Length: 149
Image (cartoon, rainbow, N blue to C red):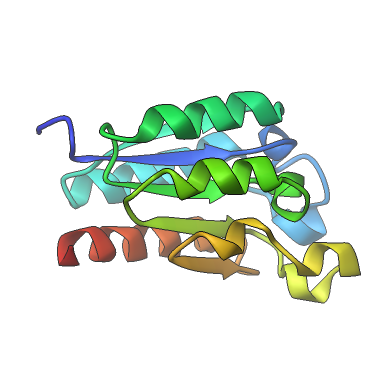
């Protein structure tokens, strides 16, 4: 595989607690279990999937800025930063390949402040409300977008 056959999955704050917190919204799968599932899908489709999770806005921005030239696409679940971070939105604008936003819960059926995502302004698509399947659908969609480019 060449270096450009990679996809980056970025997870923001508190997603390291998947499977432990608010099971009603996020389900029982841990982030590591989701990463395992995505790795398998990537392998079947000849993609390497790299993962990054951090609770810090600055580290997420650094990760996005370093992604250009290394990855053919990004999947991002910015967690709570989706609803507040213009800085992450601006960083994503610099990435010139497809980006899919993921939310495990249905952000439109939750608190009003979660109904708006800055990230949605700059991504190619958003998938929400399907639990861990949101990630799988995002990866399958992103692979199709990459192949069509």
